[in-house]
Length: 260
Length: 219
Image (cartoon, rainbow over all chains, first blue to last red; front, top):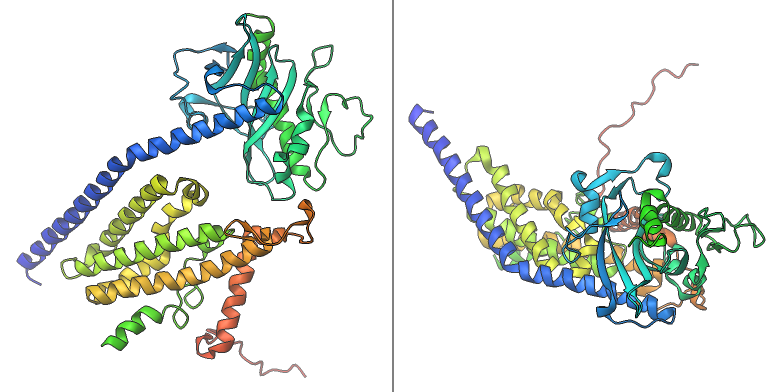
């Protein structure tokens, strides 16, 4: 092969590769940009659908509310205070939890929910009564189940002491076994459950099947689901984590002390 | 000529099926077949990507320098897959969330690059598109069979329509949870391969190594 042909081949290789890359880049960007409004609309529709589930959970406990009565706020989990510098409408909790800059590693001994990382902030909803005091608190909670991450809305009373409802909105547990956490029969157990004992110790959770109905935790805990030990443990860990000091603990403490 | 085109399209269905004969693309076949609807959507996307990918590679095959052909092929395939993913996220949002990363992973599906490199680089546009569609359909056929079996025995439903009532809802059907876990797809695909090869013994591979018979009997 002569030197000239070789050079021509090299130039042609670069030329063709650049042309292919350019056309592909053009196509991909054009499609991505033109579909962006539809993507946004889908994500917004998903957020509204999740809010509908919150409303459903509230009407299950006899407190029908409209979308407008939910006050969305972002909480700084490190201090337990509201952080109004973040707009709740654009806050993406899943994204925040996966980015190093907006999340922290959960110490292994505190990671009872098996989450590994937790976002620095969380978006919560508040419902106020006629005298503008907090009447109900709705918190997003999540934890590792048997084969998926469980995600739920946890509804607490205005003092953050009593669980009013727990509504799962996303999970991939085994149908007919772990997936029974979303059945109304099981969810009903979470109604009016005190989370702390008189000494202020967190007692809420899912009762271990071996503990029996007469264990000292009976009044604070719900029955597990037979055959779904790992899912039940996951729900237990999830409740303990998010109501504990590394979850919403500081926030709930501030709510109790009426600093908010 | 008409005949050979027909053959290009139909041979990959059973005689030269990418999944059961060439054992390619198994990873995604395990992941997206827990239900029939995800299997159907995945099949559709793979057929589109294969047809368009093979077609475009065939169009530029004479301009493509040998030294950079793989990178150019991958660029084309990756772009098509990203476009497909974007379109799914826009028009089939719920299903695309369930398919999650597996749409993106079509880029690494050996069938797509395999057809581009082995067929589209040496054939004209129309046969290449037909070959792409044919291989896509061959992959789809297996995916749909596996998806239907897994959803039916795992949940008692097809396309989310409940056919058998599970015992948890008072019926007489005990869902086979194994079917919803990845190993079951291995068993079913293995069964299909066995079925095809017992009908078409030509597909049975010759053992590459045979143990040498021992000459020393030790007696």
